Length: 246
Image (cartoon, rainbow, N blue to C red; front, side, top):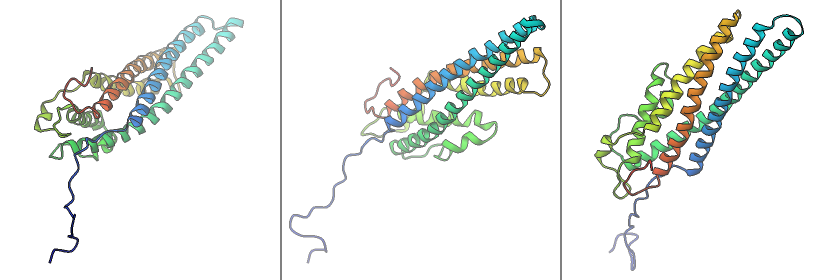
């Protein structure tokens, strides 16, 4: 007798075609929007820091009388404005960072299906790598590089071969990383100087210069990052080989 389940017209199930895994374009759009927003706020914070420097110079030149009181008020307004812009920047960047972690996890999962073989960085590194002191200056970029190489490698039937290891990485990704990461570290140095309990006008000037230049680097890095992740998200939906950065 035929095995259970067999009968007239029965056929064994057939595996459907492999569907190339993708990263949600909605998720990618949120990441880009938050990076652009953070970049704009970092640029405004740069102007705020330089405005505080100018107000401090005016205050030093007019210390007494009516002008002295006026320039002191201007200094307070400029200082508070600089702090407000920085606060808004950090709110936007924290939101963007959370979305970035989600994007990296989804992208790692997608590339794991494109290349199910051995790779150096597991999915846990997409989050854990950011929270290891000092190592977080290097590990996250290595994880992103691996994701990028797999995502941009030529595919056959939605899969990539061992050749993905020889694929290059985008200059935009490096601009994002090398401007953003040191920029955040340097900004913290400047903030420590200006927030010290006892500071001289010279200390404040140095602190705001450091913050302003660091925030400018951060703004440039985040703008590059917005373009980089837009193109990389799009690459997940491209099955044909070619230059993904055009």
